[in-house]
Length: 276
Length: 351
Image (cartoon, rainbow over all chains, first blue to last red; front, side, top):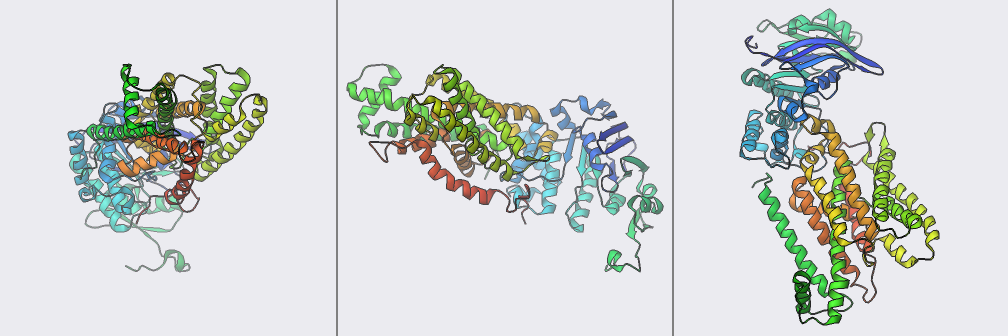
């Protein structure tokens, strides 16, 4: 659990954004340092749009995103990159690059014009590699890494920005369950030990339930509920939002919810029997 | 083993390339339709640098200082301009095969230059300006033709460039009818890419313009590195994406326009040289831009020296030499650098 003494890092007030066929409406929440927020919801519910607004990559139509009390949109680009780091869904690299120089790209906002990275930048990058357990990959080509390794290297580059706020857009996409758990555990540790405020978008309800301090559920651009996992991941609510028959179990040891499919006996090919 | 770039490494690499360039220039001074002794070359260079009279014969002086030296300098400047323009377009368009010639930008610049000849005659500044305008308009047109929806497909972009080049060449052929009084063989050579006719503008101004364009692209070398990994990623890392792209767009087009206005459409230098430099020194633009400028000078000087020696006493247009090497390399890169299915940029998903 986050220590309540840590200060609020991110404040979102009445945040709205409009596309031609879709609108994100009146989102409100605040995020303390050390806190991990999971943003969940069906496809096209506005999760990634919200994350881009938090990152300052989109300008809000109404409302405000404040980081340490200052509007994100008013920050100089480099200043913003020193406060907010974004791990986006990986886009292809044009030319081969090794892991260490790739992670050093996170230092761009700290370099002078035409500058080269110095010893201190190198030290920050190496610490980021250690924190994400990718030190052994430093000399490998990014293009040759496995999905789980690549995600951790992207996270390392974000940490090299030395941000207060870490935003992750579906960081576990395309990862097998082992890598998913490993990555989320890592992110949770970073939030708790290093005091990053973390907001992540995920389709994995159970990862959100297990690792998040709070969960924000969106549906068609509207915030439906915000709170601790057990208060948001309720059966009736999830069944209505995801239009699927679900079961929510509460883990007796942790009190955290666990979402499972309700087996439909007349359609075994959809749910299928559990194979442990 | 260190993979981290330092300014010392940039300086060392540039010194090495500059040394190679000087050595090659020395050789290029000696060879040609008349082969000159190296001692005469040395004397000629000494005269050119210090102005002090030497024992050089008047005939040799003419060949060295008024025929070969200007041409060698021209080859160097044009090679640097085309190489850096290619490296700039590759990052700007996120396409490893971008090159001013392949994208039709050189044809656009040539069309602009010929239009200025038709309309304004031999006005000294009109031609490079018209060539620059032709280059900027063409690359903008190819960019919009290459776009499908919001995505810029690398294949569609290249096709758009090739088709645009063919269309513009047809327009050039049409315009040539209005220049029939002029030396059409000269124009035909120029269109293929040629360094044999004396530059219509002072070498000093040409060098200054190219240097400005190279410096402008070098100034955004750091942001360009990040741009290679995607625009929103670069923006999140603190890059002013719009300003960076505008600078590269204008500077690469200026370099192309200047090069074409003095030497016609020399192909593939902007493709070959940056890839060769990446292979040798890595793909960090803070090293790539200066190394490409120097290597571009080396490569085009070597190509031009071949062009005027292999069939001596006549010569080939240098564009023929670069195309003989460049076209196969283009095909190789097309097959190895772009994803197998033309379904978008899905490469880089190793293991």
